[in-house]
Image (cartoon, rainbow, N blue to C red):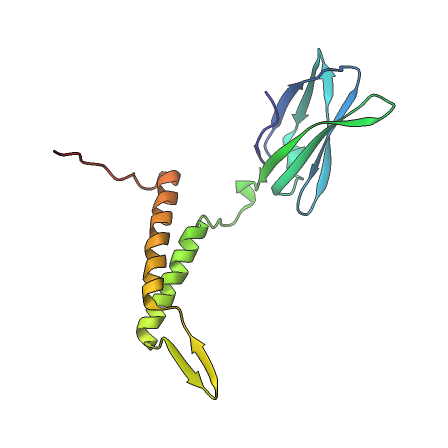
Length: 170
């Protein structure tokens, strides 16, 4: 088992990795958007082991981190591996969670714009020498269709809707 791709704050985490030099000391460094921390390891029988208690992961800030695994033989440090891990917020700490996707938010904005356009009915106008040209309603409708399909795809991936059934006939 290698490094996890995701970790939830406050969860117990454990992983291992085979190493070439069991006599070296190994350490992970995780660098994120607003924090940086280190994870110490132990080496047993040619494999390094990480064992993180819930109390330790509870202190981590959520976000995407780049991890680096370093080995040190006493004379110098070298990079063994690197990758990414996402630390998710602890659900017990959250009051609410916005689960809308980018496509859903954009579709809502497009629909709001179309609704406003229907009420105002001006595509372009000039006041005191300044002119304003709005996106044509046809382009807004085209964007609405495009993002409606994206929203449908996102909902299918989340398991909220089923993919369309195809009927074959001759």
